[in-house]
Length: 252
Image (tube, rainbow, N blue to C red; front, side):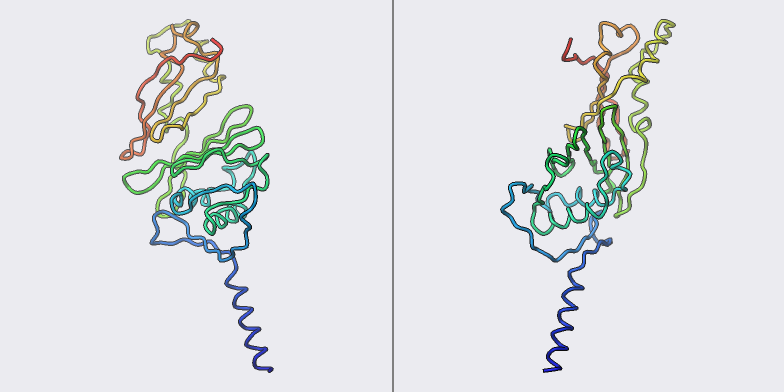
């Protein structure tokens, strides 16, 4: 009996150790992080179940784990919480949203995801290059504007890639007419005040649009337009300007 008790104890300890949550890099994977988790105790009858196909969306899920905490500065999504969220999706192809009024998924696709955070919005968008890496853009939107963070992920390594001004060829300068006009200096200075919105709806394009008061009737002598359209080039890893144009505002 004494020997049997020892054997049972050793088995119990071994099982407990195997249930520990770990995160490690898999060098053979496709720019992914390997997270192992062996528990499956989640109930599936919750009204707050959010379905995500793990294998289909693995690249984006892995990249979210690689992001630094600073990317979530306005609302905080710590790594330990992201690992828990990731593991639940890996095990069940869903996660349970226990705080829908605070953290609410709006969309999740292979190349993008968006979440409303109280009165703000956070999104991530990834663009695959010919080197089998990803250019990653996160957008943290709050009441007084938005903050972009831009990275590249290759072979499970996340590195700072560019800044907003460089990635989009200094887009505010692209709005200005090239002819010299002394009367435009004040108009040009006003470009520092509008809030520019970034539309990531299209898979390989980004539209940048100014706030409501840059309208054609008042600014067409100095500006080419109030909106720009960029297309991602997977070879150069850059967003190339396709056009600058005037976009009507809802209140005009």
